[in-house]
Length: 428
Image 1 (cartoon, helix red, strand yellow):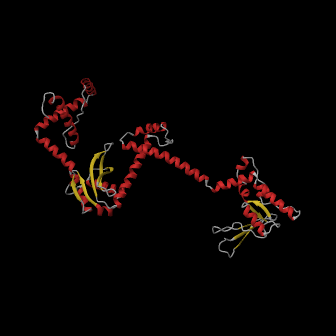
Image 2 (cartoon, rainbow, N blue to C red):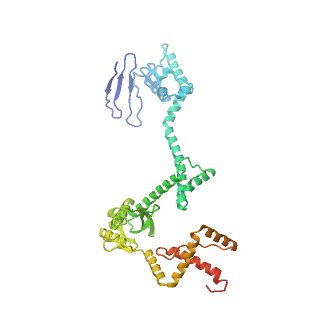
Image 3 (cartoon, rainbow, N blue to C red):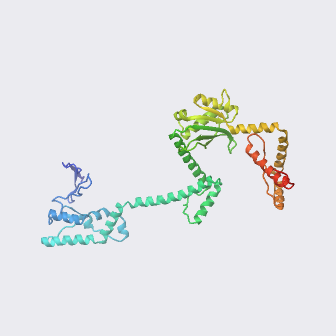
């Protein structure tokens, strides 16, 4: 037989509609009231629900003393036990629920009123002190404490702490210019020192990805600071070769971050499809857009473009600088001073004949010991025997080699002063 549902709307705004369910003959009707406002009284009783022996004041008194107590069709039951009857915890602890309290079948005896009242009070007291009821009450309280949520949060905090330690280790490798192969060894060392490093992200591949992620987040933060402060931007680009020997473009910025003095910042190493001015311009603008510099912002804040003196960069007709200036009319282009210095040193070396002899001398020394491991080893052994230090001399005096030229000349000058001029009393 199908159940028939009837909805009765009350005129009180704080309660939702009351739904009565008519079940098959022999089953009790259930009356439920749902609260819509905090502070309303739950399961509002009526005269047809509580036991006939109780008055309204007695019913409310028992309800206040025992909040778990409910009644249906003049019979008592336990709301906590009724809600907990399907859990497996009680079976594991070998405790069974009272069917009468679960299904609201507790009623008074047919004896005198005083005896019936005492019987009900005794049943309520014994149920309240029973082990099954206490377990049901504990389960209800724990359910309200969100134990699962607390457990998930505790586990998440532990996992986040482990990941944080791994991230700091990977960041240390990048900061100190150490190889990523040291990642696993450093984690093992920290674990032996008592640190909890977890069980994942311990490989050098994970370390590489972590550093890439950190770099991207740092770049986003820096670019956001530049954009929000409307700092003036200068872009310096230079061509280079990637590890895979492909043409690439190094993009550097000079701008003020957080209102500080403007400084140079590495932005990106962009691989070039070709070395034509059009492709270089497109790659540069795509790099700036991907980093977070919008077209409108560049129009207002991009003030200078710097590169080397190659024709593809500074060509008057179709160089990168010319093409970029046509798009951003307020842009100031500049030939990089470092590249100018390189060219000046190269021209000076070509004009001075004595420097050419010195250059040939250094190149022969470099070739002698750099191309033969045996000669290099014998040089080290000879230096150890006489207690001298070997100063490395590299290939020098060519364009784009000013820094290495200075180091090589300094090494020769130090050797000349210590071993030739000072022993004979020469002035330095």
